[in-house]
Amino acid sequence: MDIRLAERVKALTPSTTLAITAKAKEMKAKGIDVIGLGAGEPDFNTPQHIIDAAFQSMNEGQTKYTPAGGLPALKDAIIAKLKDDQGLSYDRNEIMVSSGAKHALYTLFQVILDENDEVIIPIPYWVSYPEQVKLAGGKPVYIDGKESNGYKITAEQLQTAISERTKALILNSPSNPTGMIYSKFELEAIAEVCLKNNILIISDEIYEKLVYGSSRHISIAELSPEIKDQTIIINGVSKSHSMTGWRIGYAAGNKAVIKAMTDLASHSTSNPTTTSQYGAIAAYMGTQSPVEEMREAFEKRLEIVYDKLIAIPGITCLKPQGAFYLFPNVKEAALKTGYQNVDEFAAALLEEAKVAVIPGSGFGSPDNIRLSYATSLDLLEAAVERIHTFVDSKLVKS
Image 1 (tube, rainbow, N blue to C red):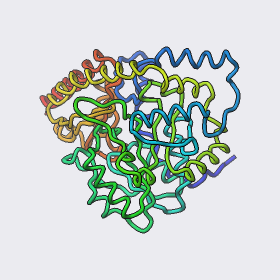
Image 2 (image 1 turned 135 degrees about the vertical axis):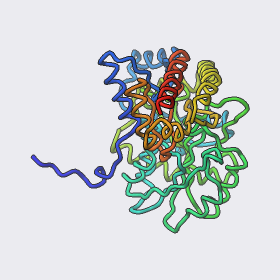
Image 3 (image 1 turned 90 degrees about the vertical axis):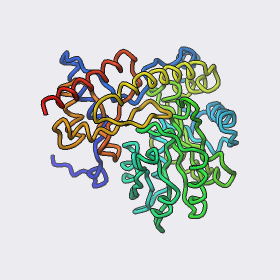
């Protein structure tokens, strides 16, 4: 039977991250010694007290449906977290718990966008932002975050990109894929433009706990009550508490938007997984020492691997301030080793050097690659050494 697919899915761009990861796993299954640096998840197990709380909830019979927008107790834990960390006050009807932060974003776009509404997306961007906007009938409008400005956009760029169809701006700080963080000064300038033009701010803060050195994460919603009212915060426990597979995220903001999101979720997921919600309560209400231990481990890896990476000929890299990614510019290395573009260079790294990285083209930045340091230090050092050897060998031959 010839089944015609909906036009909205025909336009989707397959995930580059998933494609590279699948290829690396396939090679590993064949016994090939591949080092994968594509992972978007911590390599630590979920802290034991969270696992114990989830297990206890199952033993106590907490295995049934919950409210579509999440358990009241989890909403209260999220409210307490936002108050403690950002000094922000929310009510339960301003919180919606979702099946991961990605689901919160997807649901948000579905309830705020009409056909051809525009969403401004800074480049580099997380791969799912434009696809989710398109699935909701919206139109992505891109602003190039210049490498010279830390891959961040300016208020002046934002003002120029706004049209009568502009509905929202996405901010991701710390950023995936760059690891860069917007300063308070930069956020204030962007907030002023959004207020003046009545633009909704979608603040993706999923990496907020993974910040290094003297850098500090600031939520744009902290700046003023007016900005808070115009901001939807997206966050969750996936990265902060190494709970990627548990699929618990949340949205915090305008109660009318949150109600619409909750109503839509009631017809799609019914509710986030009950057991996972009890685990998330323990994540937010229990000890935070495992979060800090993980952050410290990532920072140590960054300090060691960064210097080794920028020592490779033709590779430059801004030092990340957060998250767990390096986003080096490898255009010169690609050209000097005989490849027409970075995509070809990344493919050769996998086939010949047996190192899996994500081409920057999937993030809107074709001159870069993304490397995750959410893996052991030994593997990281081995991977960077392989890349260095690969580049050196090609340079000698050329």
